[in-house]
Image (cartoon, rainbow, N blue to C red):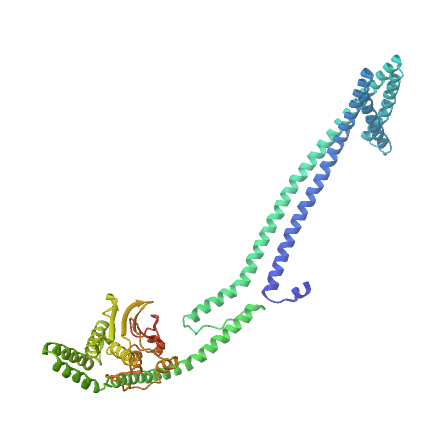
Amino acid sequence: MLRELWKTEGIRKKLIIYYLIVTFLMGLTSFYSYYNAKVAIEKLKSIFVDYVYLNNLNSDVNMLETEVERYLATKSSDALLNYYSLYNKLENKASEILSQNYYDADGLMLKDIANMINKLLEEADAAVNAKRGRITSEYIDHFTKSIKISDYIKFYITNLLNNKLQEGSAKYASITKNMEYLSYLNAFLISVSIGFSVFLAFLFTYKITKPIIDLSHLAVRVSKGDFEVRPVELKTNDEIKVLSEAFNKMILSIKSYIGEIRKQAEMERKLKEQEMQNLKMKNILKEAELKALQSQINPHFLFNTLNAAAQLAMMEGAEKSAEFIENVANLFRYNLKKLDSAVSLKDEIENVKRYIYILKTRFGNKVDFQLEVEEDILDLEMPGMILQPVVENAFIHGLEDIEKDGIIILKAYRKNGRVLVDILDNGAGMEEKRIKEILSLESSDVDKKHVTGIGMRNIIQRLLVFYELSRVEDVIEIESEIGKGTRVTLKIPYKKGEDSYGEAVNS
């Protein structure tokens, strides 16, 4: 893997070399500091080991003397056990000292101490044995001798400690001086390492980032439309050189495309002018279609209505006949004058009321009409002659041929960002197949049973044209069940060009 990394070219190799150099410098400095600290600790450790050893030896001699004296005074078994433990311990230490080869003054003094310890152990053991044999004069004599030997041992140990102290002071002074020198040297090496690392960081960063910065400046100029930039020339052998070469090729390609884009722009301008002409023609055709759809009025309605008015005039007085004829006149006036312009929802509802009045006059209580309208939507703009044909369709196809009394309900309300107009009846209903035919605009354009001659297909097409929509489901919804009735829901957007959910669509 290391061989593969070393073979790597470009920015990765530069970064690897930089990190290896910095790591080596920091590691070398740290190792040097660690080595010097370890040497100083070993020297200090040797001094303290000698001090501890001599102090422990002196302590053991004192404790032995104390335990012998306690046994001789009290003949305590605990004192005797402690004595034998210290005896073995001092005997081992003396043997260990005598087994070493010492040739310096301190070593020879330490051997004298070991010999005195052996003599001390002999006298102490003789005193203990005499005490156990109850020979009073002997154990006192041996104990006295052991005290004198013990004093000699302590004196020698004290002298040896003084020698070690002088020697340790000299070593400590030397170590302190060396540590001070090493601290300055370590500080210098750390400073050099940090300075060199910072220098390498700036050097490598500059070499890596400068070409990228140059490329970014040129890219900004190109993004602002300045394509007359000089080609980028780099002497590096990394990914940035590949990037600069690709950038130079991109500039040349952009320059070559500019000429083609200008030619295409001129052609697109001419196409847009032609498209505008086509849109104007399309609008003219829609207007013509709207006028053609609005012109389909069946003259039979006038005959039937006037015939009913004549019969009513013969049966009743002139006042009621005048009211009936006035509603008929208003209905025809609305049909003839409002088809070519937008009307309000209020106007459409008033027209439905006139039609219902005529129906109730002709058919009596056979049909009942209910109206539920929210007041704040009456000013909504919509095409004329939309609601009356739907109500008429509900009566003719739903209620005219049934024996029970019919009900037509007209509801207008706001929901989900649009106005919905529901026209419900309790008539014969229709099959699903018939509903699909109506919504797919496959039904006959003029239904012969309609006195106005304006069928559902006519209404749907006029709504689509008026609101500049393309989908039938955006303007109407029909639900029906055989024997129970039909509900037609007209979906009225607030503005032209919005679908049934209030979202803009392309007409």
